[in-house]
Image (cartoon, rainbow, N blue to C red; front, side, top):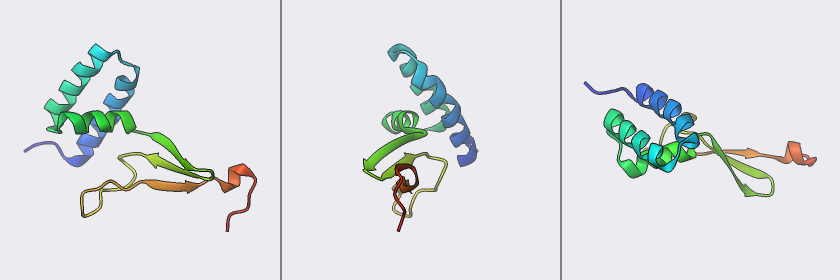
Length: 95
């Protein structure tokens, strides 16, 4: 039997740290390793490695944290994102 989802997430977490510091040639090798281990498509694997742990500012007082380990995918297969209000940091009171 193949890897469990927990194992795949652990592998992705470890490789994402190496991927972000790697050169272009090394990134190709890391992608090959990840696709061989997990069976992910190469494009999806690079997406996971790039967006792991990244925060994205969407509005003045809202941020999205893209982390594959926070929430499971929806039934439709789309990934959920955690939205955080930044009103506490900007000096405003949240409603």
